[in-house]
Length: 246
Image 1 (cartoon, one colour):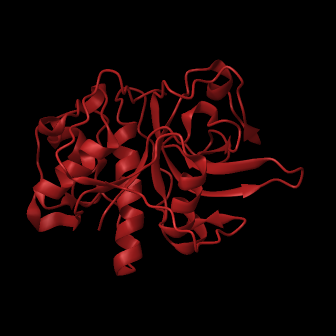
Image 2 (image 1 turned 120 degrees about the vertical axis):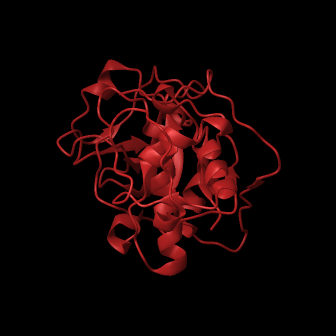
Image 3 (image 1 turned 180 degrees about the vertical axis):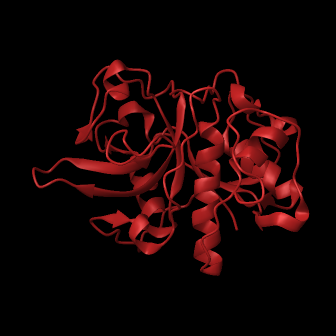
């Protein structure tokens, strides 16, 4: 399931990003679920042979921000990112970073729609066509490393957020339902990119965030995992979080 390797992938910083600034006047709601507001496309499956989770996380965040600006939910092409963003520090089916994908989209002046450039589960020749552009961005916003409160505020006020987690434990692979917490999970060595689409608290008082994995719908809770929050950055849910500027 892993498809994100921060240690082997280079994030290029050349002034395309800003840092998320928390507001003293914002009172965040007790729960948020952007799936119910039209920000999130249906579950997609990245397959087993291509480490492209970073591309799915990036398109998910941009789909949400594009909807926020235009009111139109457009499914965007992960294959476009896999095939075309190597010059920006990504490695196609061998891993990548969401921020590098956002940079590619900015300087490419767009990303194609899913319909025009469908996912193939492997890396091929770049076939981007400006005629089929579905969205673009102006850079990206980084959320303070390890700050769960900042991440929750960003989810509440901005929309779905690209995040990375440590999914290396066996317990994660066999997750079925409920709030996932692993005491041996790393908060620094993240290896799988996902999309945070909301948060809530169980009746028993467990805080969690909805993490959207690009996996078959029969995995977890219909393709989602409920990651424990306010548990010392469990599994690194706030270690690397960002979203595109649209």
